[in-house]
Amino acid sequence: MTPVDFLADLVNPDLAFLPKALAVAVMAAIMCGAVGCYVVLRGMAFIGDAVAHAVFPGLAVAFLLSGSLVVGGTIAGVVTALLVAVFSQNRRLKEDSVIGVFFVAAFALGIVVISRAPGYAGSLQQFLFGSITGIPDRDLYVVGGTGLALLLVIVLLHKEFVAVSLDRETARALGLRVFQLDLVLYVLVTLAVVMAVQTIGNILVLALLVTPASTARLLTDRLPAMMLLAPAIGAGSALVGLYLSWSWDLPVGGTIVLVLTAVFLTAYLFAPRHGVVMRTLE
Amino acid sequence: MNPDVLTLTGVTVRLGGRTALEDATVSVRRGAFTGLVGPNGAGKTTLLRAALGLVPLTAGSVTLSGGGAGYVPQRHEFAWDFPASVQDAVMSGLVRRIGLFRRPGVRHWTAVWDALDRVRLGDLRKRPVGELSGGQRQRVLVARALVVDPAVLLLDEPFTGLDMPSQELLTGLFTALARERSVLMATHDLSAAAYTCDRLILMNRTVVGEGPFADLKDPGIWMRTFQVGADSHLLKTLGLTAVEA
Image (tube, rainbow over all chains, first blue to last red; front, top):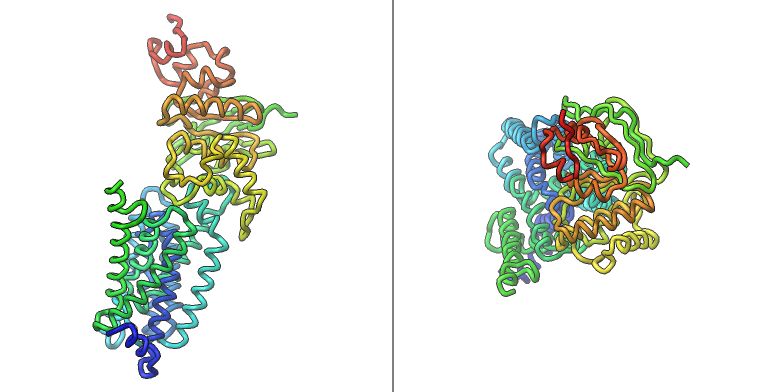
């Protein structure tokens, strides 16, 4: 299928779900790309993974009650992030162990909850691996609005996030509310993940968070450039991934992630300053 | 004017059930370069953190004169792999002063560049922090503390892992900064502290001795601080010989 055929399908009224899926995937990729920069730079990939899994019971409950998946997922993600933050205060346990305990517990709870739903296997697969059908119109506005709010918070709190990421202790000595800023960041990660779960799926969403930001980090030493590049890489890969999955009838989440990975590997090899090829030539 | 910029009175700090600092009373004078020395685990870093209000005090009080304290942590506390330039790193010291939801203005950038000139890094201000040498990194941290124009600088082990030329350059910088404000430096390097600092604070959980090196010639104080015997090379390095008991 040529890109022109893809365009024709996008505007075909019988395939109305396709442009909706594309819009949601691209907006979610932009959000994940921006927040993902902090996740990658602070070495929080495991927290990102945890939040991604932790939203699952919320999605399951919302699905059972026919409520909003976005609201359900957000509540579950934030509650898990709060539990991790509180239990990590106990110095006997390292934070990654606490995360390990709670995110698997949340995921397990989600599986138990969703097993009570009729047509359990089909919906489970949709949650875990994503789907481009069945996105209600309302979700377009929710994702768009959440995306704008999330980007606004990032713009407003960027210098605080940077100060805390550079040096927590000194940020605290300067009088910044480090714990509260961490919580805000967790909430942002949760929101970005929830927005992306619909199309790309619960398990693969980590790729949207981590891969574009990692790729951007290979390409630049300037944070502003990185924070523009990562969402662009995410959005571009979502577009190309959806196109490939549509033309070859491949699962959409998996295809998007493989496109992202291909872009990452290309940057890893050919990045202008830090790529393997340039370093070998030097 | 009060000659002390920073005073800790009877400060006790418990961390995770263990007493890191017990009944410590010290004062740091304006215009003086004060060295804070003691063995590992003596509570040097805890004392600095207590002065900054970063740890809860179990007992005692901290008095800081107007102008506040600038913190220069150990170099490994800073994320050097972060994609930030030298001037971005120094700007992060002004975050609180710029205020929530605001962007840095001309006067903030001027303050950053002045601080960088002060530590002689003016020409590297756009360099990514990851490409700096150890000595340059240390100077970035000093500039970040200086940018808020503090009355006293608190330095935690600034010489660790640096070669001699870098140490010498930093010592000159610290001495000059001590004259115009005040510097309290925790360090392992005893001989450097003894010969460059105006005053020394010897500690091991609590303050064992305090004053100019010339007034601390009693080897017993050093033996108590560092838990060493009378024939320790430490005393010989400092030019002190134990009196036979």
